[in-house]
Image (cartoon, rainbow, N blue to C red; front, side, top):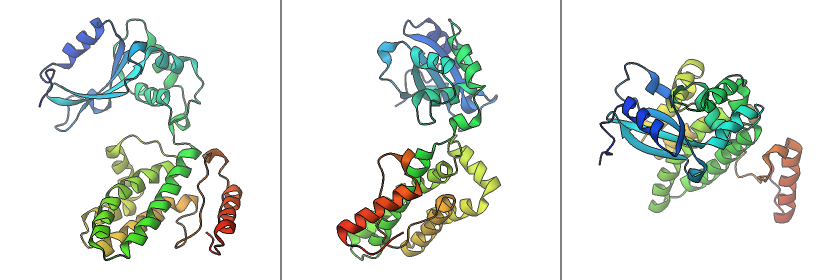
Length: 277
């Protein structure tokens, strides 16, 4: 069902936001700034709200008969961008807002709060918005963890396992795709930007990904998935050997190769395993 606001123009919405007592600013980002808009383009809006709406993060509506993707931030979060050094961390909400704001067009800003935050965000180096070491570690571990479980399930002829593996490969492929960027400390700017990057810089990965999605034979599909896992994790040591003992550390920042090896050896001592990465 369409939203009641589906026929409202962007100018109408901006005027409504500007007069709303709980709104302190708004900015337009993404392809919504293009003129004319492409057929499938959505409208990305950052809306700055008063603190009582601090539990709001994202929303979806319809504007000008297009999907409206809403991002919310409180006044204090926006002010933190103006006052902070570029070290909020790419996974923090304020950093996500800053990344949006750095490339946005301000629509409503009665107190100049968004202008100040935008000026600050545009001075941050690209590294401030890039995935952290923690993000890379989590992506590497998740790709390997899922790969091992998927390999185990591939060996079963139980029809429930076969179907479950199809489901696991759906989200597993998505994790490999996004993990490729996290592992390389490449800023995630959405699926379309990711496809364009791969087409230019790693067409082999993109081609393999497309073949894997289209493949119906599960054995062949897994082999392609396995290639993608190896390509995605190559910069940080690649995939685990078959059925390894491995540890996942709580604090990724301290997950040095030495710490990981020590934790793995400890698990081996508990289970008397003799396999290693």
